[in-house]
Amino acid sequence: MLRTYQGGCHCQRVRFEARIDFDHGTFKCNCSLCSKLRLWHVQLRPEAFRLLSDETTLTEYQGKNPVAHHPFCKRCGVHVFDRVDTPNGTGYPYINVNIMCLEDLDLNEALNAPVTCRNGLENDWDNPPPESRHL
Image (cartoon, rainbow, N blue to C red):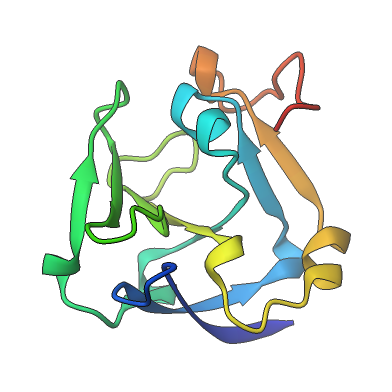
């Protein structure tokens, strides 16, 4: 069921709104950044995400993947979302929202949603990684 969530970082300086349907599933990735952060996210089209705080509350890390932008809160350091401008296997730009930053998250709904593991470490987005228990 499509629902609009509010969310933010730990100190609440970074605030956002996102329209999410957990029936479409959640994602975990084994790339070097996602695995170190243990990110669990939903993938959204950019029009389903709205940053409510000012961009100046964010700073950005750019890793090895030149199309992925990893903003995080300047104050508390929480990684709330990613912007992927050029598609990684999707055919369109998208936003990855860290579901643990959603307020009023029904954890059972998230736990019961399908989980897809992505092999970002080997840039093989169409196939699952050989190991995903650590994600």
